[in-house]
Structures are given as C-alpha cells and as structure tokens.
Image (cartoon, rainbow, N blue to C red; front, top):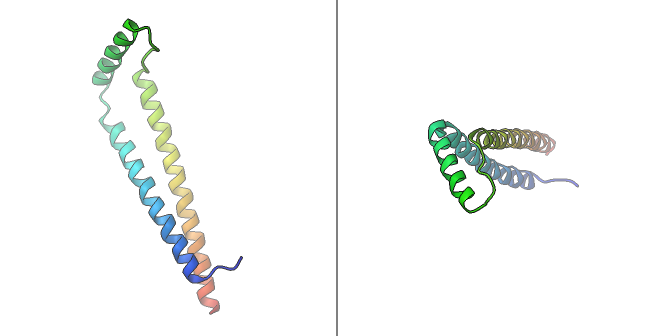
Length: 102
C-alpha cells in the first residue's frame, strides 16, 4: 500500500498524540511512586487490613506489592513510548523518501 506524504503526516500526528497521553500516564505513575511514603502506606495497609479482617475480606496488598505493581506499569509505559518513537522515526524516514522521489 503506497502512502502519500499527507497520510504519513497524519499517522505521525496520531502517534504523537498517543505518545503524549502515554507520557502523561508515565509522569503520573512516576509522581505516585515518588510520593509513596512507606510509613503512610504501611499505616493505610494496616488500617485497611484491619477493616477487611472485620468484614472477612481479602487481605490488603502490601506496600512492596503496590510499589512493584507501579514499577511494572512504569516499565511497560517506557517500553510503549520507546516503540512509539521507533514507529515515528520509521514513518518520518518513509516521508523523507517519498518527498525525495517527488
């Protein structure tokens, strides 16, 4: 399928928009991780655990579990962002070649 320069520019723009959203989500995750205070989370976890035990509910997640979950999400977002940049670079290269041939 042959792409026109306009098609490529539109696709690059769409990916850049998605990239901005991914970056904002990554920034939010990083901010949350940086604000985690072990004492507060331990207290929250303990309070939640106590309340759950009274209601025979599932055990609250530990601070380490919460931190690990967010670190995994951070790594996934960074990988997604890297793939998006690669896609943008590939599309820009296609665009340069297309413009050079016209």
